Image (cartoon, rainbow, N blue to C red; front, side, top):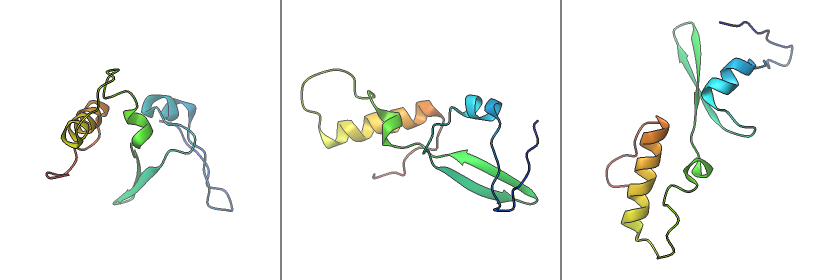
Amino acid sequence: MTQTKISSAYQTTLSAEAIRELRLRPGQRVNQIVDGNRLILEPVEDADALAGSLGKSRRAHSVEEMKAAARAGIARSGAAGMPEGV
């Protein structure tokens, strides 16, 4: 566990250890969840995280195939799956 200080502008710095373990990138979004007296930062996966998830084939993919590949990529990344029907 590491400690950080809240600045007068209500900003703080994440530890290098947390950044490495969560594989955070500059500009990436995180959800802020208040749980009692705890603040939880949860990485939000974006479309860039799915790059290459469809493989290297040259043929066109159907929307259903792309959705299935996106679900698989999200599942592999440990994020919550997409809602049914998406």
